[in-house]
Amino acid sequence: MSILSEFERRLEDAIEGIFAKAFRSGLQPRELARRLLREMEVNKTVGVREIWVPNRFVFHLSEPDRDRFQQTEKALRRELEQVIVDGARERGWGLVGEPEVVFETDPSLGQGVFTIESSLVEGPTTGNQPVGTEGPQSDHRPAELVQLERGRPSKTFPLDKPRVVIGRLGDSDVVLEDPGVSRRHAELRRENGDWILADLGSTNGTMVNEATITERGLAEGDRITIGRTVLEFRRR
Image (cartoon, rainbow, N blue to C red; front, side, top):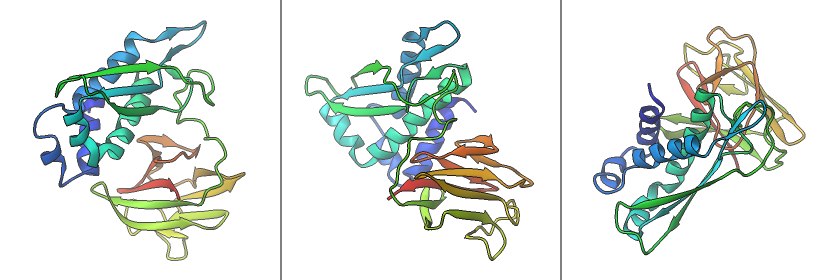
């Protein structure tokens, strides 16, 4: 599935029920995602060993379009930021910092018209790996896993221990009744305020943002797939 098609699928799952109404006419989310990928291509910087692309994008929208996106803006921003990560990973580009999408209103623009500004904003990264493959900066806020069903929260698991085991066994800290989940599938451990996810030799593997991992630091909004279960990592 293409990046744009996958973006639309995730967005529709995340805001099911108002998706069709919100985006029935006027500016469409796919137009924003397509322009974002184009901006990454046009504004890439070729280094000695790496190719770097912008990681911060500011969309200027008309007042009617901004009003229409208001209820879905958080989900739309999150999914567009995932497009940045996916686009960089697919093309082997590097990001100099965490992806960021910002929406602003421009009263001079007509409905359906938008402009975009892109920039490189430095943050922690290594080599030409897109941000998201490295651990996040320390954050000591409480954290939780939110189980999603068709993009909507269904259950919350607070991460209130230094080590949290995810599995099918009843004595796991996070019990998932999913045949694709191993008895002891994965674990989360807290290190200096960061949360590290590690696969425990599971049968079907562990994925973060649709990439299979062995061990990975988590950032706000990362989605963990275990079997058919999707868990979103959140700070409180």
